[in-house]
Image (cartoon, rainbow, N blue to C red; front, side):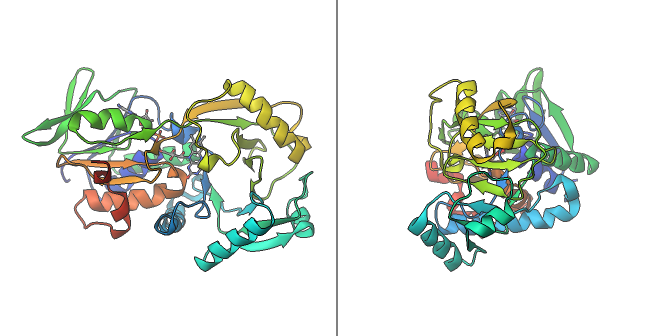
Length: 358
Ligand SMILES: Cc1cc2nc3c(=O)[nH]c(=O)nc-3n(C[C@H](O)[C@H](O)[C@H](O)COP(=O)(O)OP(=O)(O)OC[C@H]3O[C@@H](n4cnc5c(N)ncnc54)[C@H](O)[C@@H]3O)c2cc1C
């Protein structure tokens, strides 16, 4: 066994890293203040895509994320993603064609289709648009299920999971990481991975490691299970939605949730869910009279919105914090484990190093 590694955070990112590290023979302990997938990972929309990207490098990172999911699928089976593809009519007319052209130029599979084909692909839709983009390679994942599956595979390789244990401080000695302070004392480790989502900024500040996070509250609603089937992830001007295997329809309350820049909720979660549900009913009357569940979460969005991944200032420290964790988790697990174990730097992570906030 190599030097002990502590991973702070049992969300999908910490779980993916622990899974790869433990699988490669590392001595891993995952510590979480709450339960596995108790924060963003248990409250996510879970859309895996590269069509939403901030620049070309970010597109290629997301594409690599999709490919890594397919590699991991061989191990996770039904606990990993499904690949129904997306149907998008977020933008109308010329903007939609421009988006299709841009994605085609990047080599991304995309097709522009008309009203009849949309109605055939999604017979449950009440409001059928004139045109939409089909993005056939995109997928969805229940991140809570995937997180638990990754943690149980890590455990099968000897990893330990400590839940309900807040890390108070990352401890250093002689200028390098020496462990973490928790109630009752210090757990020693030569390496600490911060995969703590929105909790990362506070953990890193005392080490002089800046990681400014944006405040991004979000609400997701779920309908009752319905008999009608949605065959794709739907990206519409009013909202994004998809169906879970038990028939419930899941939708973020904010239109265009991936790019949502709301820092404070304008209304209580239940009121936002009411409004979003009205938009949902206009698309899909089968959802019934009211929503069943509204879940609030803080999305872990770094200050410049890009992922933060790599070694920290203090030797022994590694950081992995990002939004789009559904898209990137499988890739992050592979690359972080390689870098933490000293098996070479991942060139695809160069633009995303933590030092950019210094
Ligand atoms: C509403 C919503 C919709 C989303 N939709 C998408 C989407 O469609 N596609 C996509 O790719 N991404 C999406 N995301 C983002 C994605 O879910 C996240 O990027 C991902 O879940 C982050 O995983 P994580 O493990 O980094 O963080 P989390 O799941 O937040 O896990 C971090 C863990 O660290 C623990 N922790 C924090 N501080 C401490 C401490 N001091 N001590 C011990 N433990 C600590 C927390 O308890 C928590 O369990 C969405 C997120 C939300 C909230």
